[in-house]
Amino acid sequence: MRRLKALVWATLAALAGLLSIWPTISPHSRRHLALAQTLATEDPLLGLIAGWLGFWHGIRARSWRAMVLGATGLALRLRPWLLRDAVARQMAEAMREGLGPGWQQRIPAEKHRAFVQRHRTDLIGPLRWMVWPRVQVTRDVLFAAPDGYPLRLDVYAPAHASTLCPAILALHGGAWFGGDKGGAVAGLRYRWLASQGYVVFDAQYRGGPWPAPLSDVKCALRWIRANALSFGADAGRVAILGQEAGAHLALLAAYTPNDARFPPSCLGKAGLPSDERVQVVVVCAPPADLRLWPPVPDGAPALLLGGLPADIPAVYEEAAPVSYVRADVPPTLIIQGQRDRTVPPAHAELLANRLRAAGATVVLLRIPWGRHGVGPLPLGLSGPLIQYDVDRFLAWAFACGTRAQPIGGENALQSD
Image 1 (tube, one colour):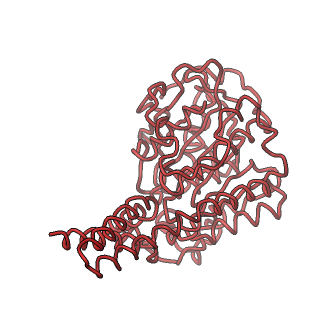
Image 2 (tube, helix red, strand yellow):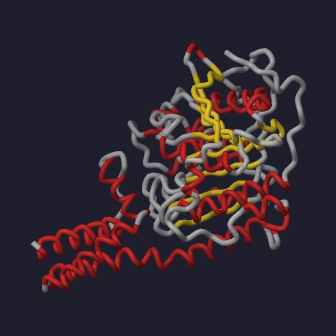
Image 3 (cartoon, helix red, strand yellow):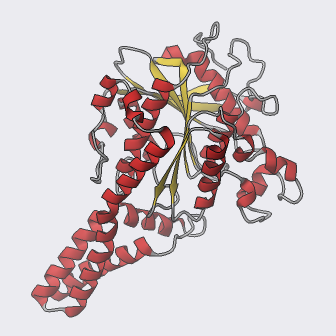
């Protein structure tokens, strides 16, 4: 029995370790296995415990197989654990490079004192704040109904804020046609942001036809500016945050405010402001140019845009965030897992290089072990590291940025 127990623990540790270093499994073909791989990568603690138990019981049972398998699992899970400090230093250097020396001095002192003063390299991060009881959640608020299709959002806000808080429009991933607001993982992140003094609007958008999803995002921005005061938000300080497909839409919305080519889906609705500007954009795994994807007829870009790049080149050009890069776009924080196969690092590198060449403010945070979906949860191996810099980037941008000009009647409550 002791030998069996040792072999079970050691095998689990070795499998978890091998899964964490295995080439990235596509979430579209093997969703559950891809999720298991992400969990194995982001939570080395379970692998370390299993490896130690397997190795220890192997010694006691005199099972060399259990000892070898347990030691293998331990070695594979220790490597990323030991890399955390080096990665944290690389991320700190990326922030200095993108924002300039002394950038943290621009953050208000009282805000800076509230932050932890070094990169978090634990696995639980700000867990106690994720279930913070003083975060008020308002669900299923109708903000538009284009062509009779109801679009709703959830609002995460500090329950007892003494001043108006910056607003964040959050956009989910899901290859444009999947995903939805209100995910359990994303909800924990939004609770954390609300605990830090932001009002988060987690919004839905349609999957097509193009440019319907972008029009919905622009409508949400106008609605937020019109209704900000009702939720304790400052209509003059708005950020946009996107994950994967939501990152694509976030970049386009941030880089093309009030562009006549992309009218909001609520255009002409009485009382809504006409300003779609945001002060900062944060994106994770951003599709910077849909032409970088293989031209597959049933692929998500082709379904979204209505054809292949060779057939509709102008549409692909129009739908590429890199097409709108210029010096005055909002400060942009890019988070990219280096082992992401769904949205490969080439997208983030292309976008960051274009922004730097144009003279725009950009920070690219590279996560060496990160796979698709890294970043939205402030837990695990990557989450606390990423959230540390996201918090500071937002605080820096709102402290340094130009407020959007107030618009008459923008805080009057609107409803569809």
